[in-house]
Picture 1: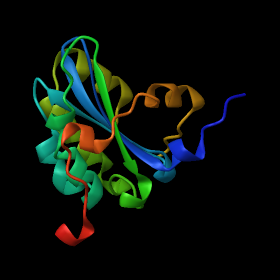
Picture 2: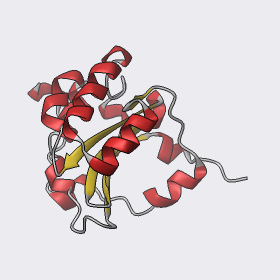
Picture 3: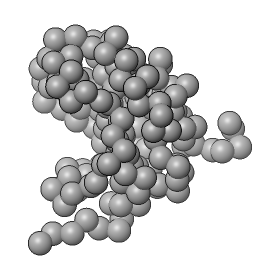
Picture 4: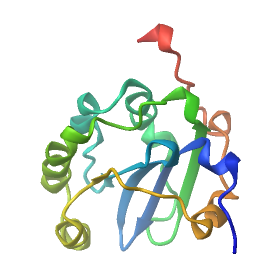
Length: 155
């Protein structure tokens, strides 16, 4: 049985992926057992959601355009940072319903169907599985995309 590596558990993943013309930002924080999904194309919910996120997640999510995919039908860009840059997680759990309403206001078509089916955008029971780590083997370092690292002193 495959196990999730300590390295993978100690990272926070920011993924912009696309399917059927919809692009979304997915943030996965295995150590905090949280994940967040927000649409970014054709309409971005990120700016409206930023005040509800913890500062490190807010900092990286605000730079989603630097992670934007080139092909809206089949592309994904994964950027990861050390989990110590945001040890509390992505967002307070009580912000989940408001984050859901924000995402719902910005998504249409296939994305709306998916969102209404799942009923939430902030998961607080997220666990990274060994199959997830296969896709993370192609992650990009933040500097490769011009992403500015989070610095607590700048907050």
